[in-house]
Length: 253
Image (cartoon, rainbow, N blue to C red; front, side, top):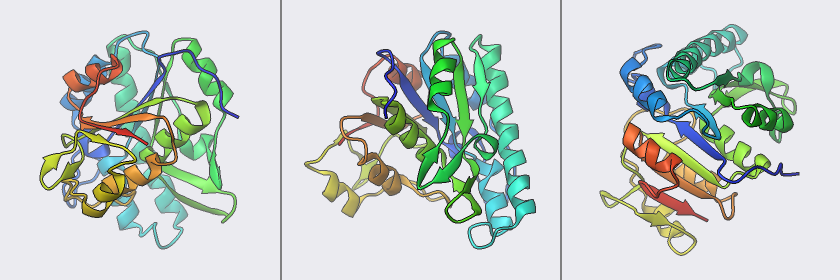
């Protein structure tokens, strides 16, 4: 059952490549200036759920311990601890800018049972008290397979929107939007989505163990009536998104 929210509720997902150095061989290197600019754009009183990717605090560890192929529990914990550090940096920056972050770690708070299982009522109450729930890409336990698996920030954002009935999602990335033939697509809807999926050129050359731009669009197709935006995560663009303006590529399916 969807939870009813006040008008204006939003989800902002910050890409891991935007807030960390994802160069090959780099582990756990953040971009403090970018984090500070993003958090400074989020004003006190914004009804928002903030989700961030793991970037170099997650992906290199997944590859190092081969966690897509085997369940190395030490590797799972090491990866989670690194992701938690990035989350703490973001929460500290939000607090510095007078927002009220509430960190939520999927490793200890969520599980997967076909869909993502979390306490939707609790998240709602946090927001209504003035907190900004801040969650992130992480490992999560799958009760069907009895294994830990990678949970991407994109999936969290989409499942939160679906289960909480939130109609506006922003994906702040290190590119200007979704590309087709080297041009940013202004809008994707049911009339052109097949063409986009067939010809997509999402200017991303870095390895991503959680899926790329095409996967993002496919997952968004589950959310009929939801408006999603993929845009470069500058402070100006984030303010535009939070203010209800169109920015980057708009996706309405």
